[in-house]
Image 1 (tube, rainbow, N blue to C red):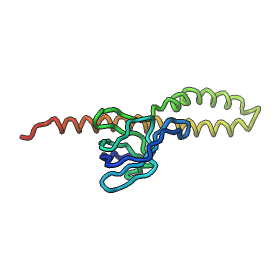
Image 2: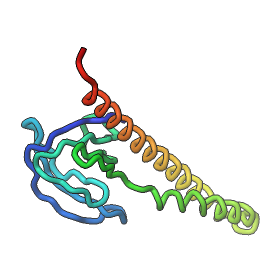
Image 3: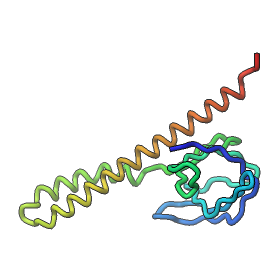
Image 4: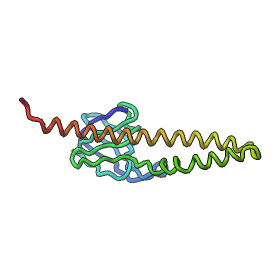
Length: 153
């Protein structure tokens, strides 16, 4: 999961919306002569031409897989909170245990157990990915500040 630092030369098409029940900001940008369209940023971050950010992408160069970013000017991290997945990780094991216990009466419950287990697995992977993104963005900024603050010898 690579980090990519870009400077927004131009920003257009800024629109606040909802994607998969989550607040997102969709926008287009041009950086170093390359234009990206319909990029969905989590939440409602400040997006302006002239900003420099470090983005966390699931796939290198694919801005459609943007997980979050760190604004270099304000040093704010914009990343999905993972609250929904955390609640699911607390509730799903209880539901799975209940359905597994009643599966002898209702064999269809085994199908539900399998689906809920898959959803639980997805939730755990998503939480780990978000934590990894936050850690990487924080570490990238610390390295940038440390390099900027050092004096040449």
